[in-house]
Image (cartoon, rainbow, N blue to C red):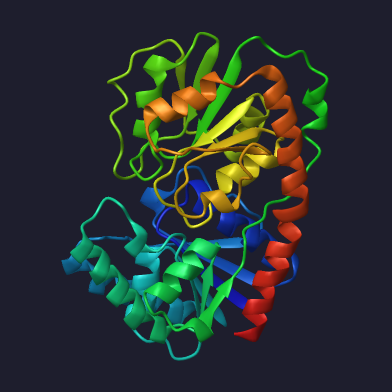
Length: 353
């Protein structure tokens, strides 16, 4: 089977999701191509057997037709059996113009009409557009119950909609650090884009009221809708910038707590990665995040999306609490979010399409 993945950016959760899927597809003997804007690739796809094809993306209304035509020409040349488009604009580029042969799969990675930084009229426009474009694809893959409920609420064709929880590869990395001495400092990690959607402003608001002995480590960069980082100057918040997957995994192992105060998500990968590492997960109560955390068992669900609420919950954590909930987090990962089920379910959808 010849498979083409179409993405806008290669960074963060989408890169992790598509990367895991592409590796499995290559291992199964499929020919896999990735169409991506090279100017929006943070790091490299760096995968043996993966063919990279560049294009120039744009969100400007006057240029969308041009981009859609460019994508169509690339797909005609590639002659794939399946095209899998990831996130709103690749979904628009691919589905705007018809493709005669290929089967089209679409994963929204958080519906655009769930965005909290646009007005009601804009969200309605997004929903109407998604409903029309749904006619031009074969399957829509939702990543959470929250996304599935939203699809039903906004009258997507539910006969085309599948639910597949994301999973990631397991490892035994946590065993290597369990016996190491624990620091008196509670190390808190934030992994992701420094923007409004991800709630990075909530993190900055929390810093001034954190008790002594809590350190915030920030791994990531602003991609779109970035939050001004310079308004907080405090030695307890340390910026590490963007780091690759291997460094991210090692950094997460060094944390006690991982925070994900997002305003909306499809299904966030950071909590899953944190659970694999056996870390406490502190999440907002928004979108799909409560589907990943059992409050008080493997993490904490914030009752308010404010800096004060985040600070209060971090201030209450103790070494014993972190160890107990961290052990529980690994248990949840092993039973719910391992990669094998995710990949098997998605490949079944490919075959059905």
